Each structure stands twice: as structure tokens, then as C-alpha cells.
Image (cartoon, rainbow, N blue to C red):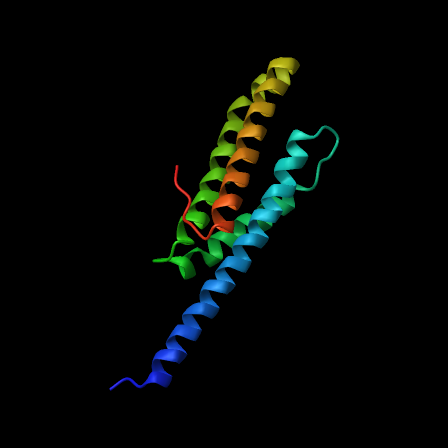
Length: 132
């Protein structure tokens, strides 16, 4: 039979896990945001390593969020990075051979990336899942 102290321990553990996931989520969003802003602002280029660190954090911690509202945020960030990488690679020849159209394509991708990160941050701040 469960006692009140058992229930309190479970709720406390769940609360600590939720807060830990939210902290990890904010760290990841901030790393993504630094990279996203730098991609839009000329001459501000942080290392791609920041983006890779954020991606690894998301991939490692994603399993801990299964069944919570925060799971959507991990998937959102991972999909955002993978789609952006795909579109950057697809438009790379355009950038190399036709500078202005390539720059325009990369700017559009970068603004889209920034939009998705900010949208996710707003939803995280409201403690709500993010959806397409």
C-alpha cells in the first residue's frame, strides 16, 4: 500500500526530472539560438561545434523526455538541425557557382532556422509542446 510519503517521493522525483529536462532544453535552445543569430548576422560566425554540441545533447537526452510534453521539443530541435543541414548541402553548389543566389538561399534557410528556434523557445517558456 502506498503511503503519502511514497507519493510525495514520486512526485518530487518527477518534478526534478521535469526541471532537469527543461534546463537541458534551455541550454540546447540557447546554443541553437547563438548559431541561428550568427547565421543571419553577417560576419558573426561561431563554430559549428556549438550546433553539434546542442545536437548531441538532444540526441542523448531525448529518451529521458519520452512521454512528456518536452519530448516534442527534443524532436523539434533535432528535425530543425537535420533539415537545415540538408538544405544547406543541397544549395551548396548554388552558393559556390552563383554567389548571390546562393547567399539568398542560405539567408532564407538561416531565417527559417532562427524562426523555428524562437518558436520552440516561446513554447518551452509556456511549458507547452511544440508542433509543426
